[in-house]
Image (cartoon, rainbow, N blue to C red; front, side):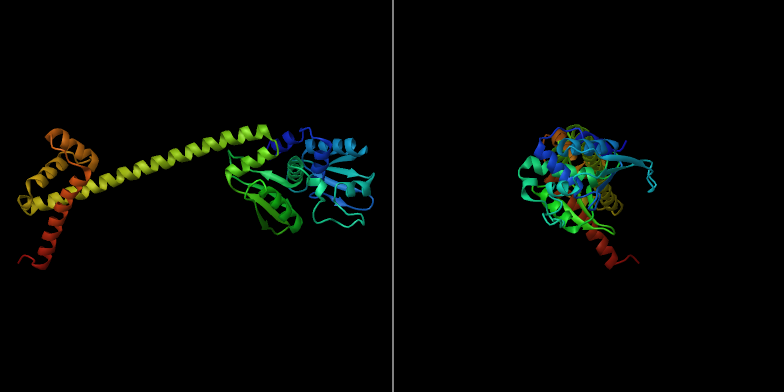
Length: 316
């Protein structure tokens, strides 16, 4: 069972007030199905969603819908459930703010559909039941989307989502429009808005685990990069020391810098901080990391000076 199916089954069991049920049905019908003067046809792959719509229609309008199970022709193993509404069609479409008094399709539902925050949440639940999906955080990138047919409805849904600060965006697709959220925390917030509490627990557990794992990987990578940098720095320092030794130039260094030479050769893998602490402990003379780095700069400058002199005046 997919994560999206699990979410839809959970929110299909939520008990609403009558006004919230109307808002949920409006969100569903405005984004699903075909309307004629004689009937309304709605389609879903989820049996629980089909039962939800059937029960809401019965409770709100005292009608009995017909439900047919059909083979899905889009390479999906799931059956399609066709919900056919053949009674009180005109009244239902007007009551759910799908059409106006003249039977014209409304670009946005009337204000009573979204009169409270709970009714807005219910409308979004209905839209999600009709056209929504969320990737399983365990197996894919974070992604929530609502695929709708009309641009106006897509912009309207995005506006509703962003009233909850979800940072949703709209993208035109080959067929219709996609309202989507990419941020992991915002998707978790959307699940809370729909009151999908069990899905929230699952989603947040996986998200926190993934975030912790990613942070651990970043720290490990950072630590490895620091180790590589320490080794690279120590190697270059030893190369400068060996160069001075080969050219009999160590005697040109002062006593403190010669001391740094001895300790670097003795502890070739130590970082500058570790080496400064070792020298301070063993000699009883405090030296900072910065002070030790200054001594190694002297070594490097002397090695470069000798190289430059030899290049300018090569031996015969």
